[in-house]
Length: 252
Image (cartoon, rainbow, N blue to C red; front, top):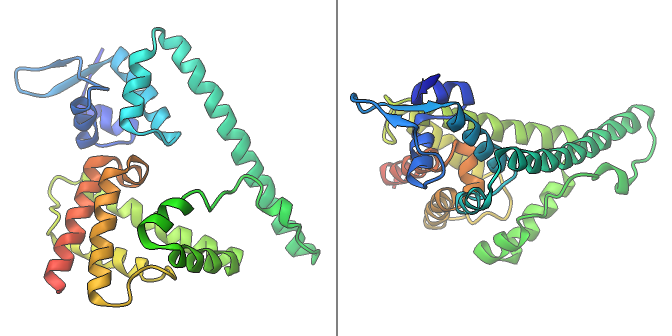
């Protein structure tokens, strides 16, 4: 059996643009290209895509994934390795779920919270070094203090807003009829910038600082696969970056 690139994108929950990018990076070539120029994928290609998506979920960059795939000899062995990593991630998520359950129960019972318990499985400091290198220790300290002082409902609301924004970006990037300078993309860019302004410590004090900050973030979204994943991959991140740059140019 074979599936077209559009069918694979729909089944896998990704985009045709992302699949073409994977081909460009040498990690997921199509099984064949038809006379009409369409790309088609067979079962082996779908298994390869599963391996790529599993590794992306674990936070690996595309160059790292390419190196892993080049070393692997057996598909079954590779998937067994993925399975071990997924089980580790399941344990981490189990710890997070348990921590939140304990927090909810303690709040309902009026009991004091145990700091050692409520943060099990969490690590909001994982990007500390990167933030300090890019925008200074003061920026990290301000955002870290703000995060620690937020209540659970406020954190959930803030994260929900971010997830909704990322989801809307992905949907727009996947729509071939939506350009980075379109009304829809510009509305999202405006929402994105307003969301950035809610983070204490972010260099958004003046118009020049904000513009420089947004342009820097846009380039980081594209260059860093961890952030590009929020927008469906590099192609989606490029769409976000271009929309943000267009927004800045239109509103200077």
